[in-house]
Structures are given as structure tokens and as C-alpha cells.
Length: 145
Image (cartoon, rainbow, N blue to C red; front, side):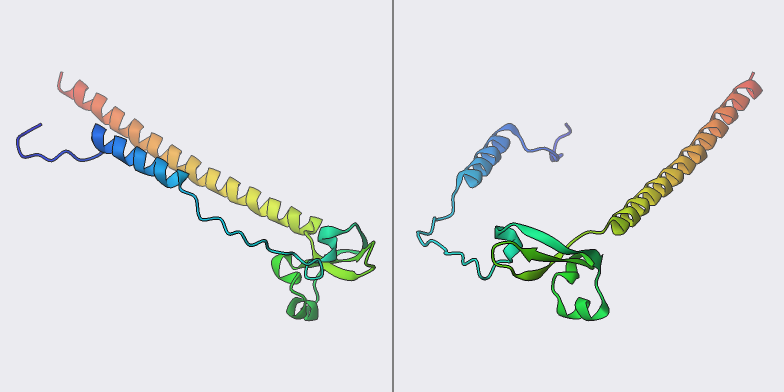
């Protein structure tokens, strides 16, 4: 290395050792444990999380009214009506429809094929450039003889 040149890139051995030791200490550090126990009341939970349930209405798209009033519609746009066995409560549960899954799958497949076509075109263009450069080099060598 020339005089006055700084070394850049990976840290030197001792710095790397200190960095590893510091990272290990951070990983081992634990947050203080609170002694309070949180009581979970089952009345706030949806019944289908804690009980057996039966699907009363199959998965269907939310209506405009349901989309505005039912929070379960927000995540997927589809809900199913369920009846819990023990409490006999009727609730809505967010679900994923087969049609929505199929649409998502084909959208993903289309994106993959599109990316593949773009990169195939880039490979062809680059190969043509390299072929032209090689032919030009050979032509110059032949002319120099």
C-alpha cells in the first residue's frame, strides 16, 4: 500500500473481534420481566378463536355496506358467517376465496413471465454486442496481417 493511503473496506481483526463481542452482548441482553400477569377475557375474543364453530354461510365477497361496517372485510374483502358451538353466537370471519387466490396466482405468474422475457431480451442484446466486438477484433487482426 502506498504511503498515506487509507485502508477501507472490512474492519481489521481487532475491530472485528470487538464488533462481534458487542453484537453478542446485545443479543444476550434481556428486557426486564414484568411480574404482572395479563388476564385475557374470552368475551373480547372472537368465539371462533376459542371454540369449535360451524360455517353458516360460505366465503363470499363483502357488500358495500359490510365493507364499511364490518372490520373483518378490511383484510381480504371476503367474509364467512360462522356459528360457535358452545356460545351459539353468530359472527363474521375473514376468509380467502378460491377465486381471489386464483387471480393472485395468475397475476404472480404473469409478473414472473414478464420479468423472464425482459431478462431474455437483455441477454440476447448483450450477446449480439459481444459477437460484434469479437468480429471487429478478428477483422482488425486480419487487416493488420
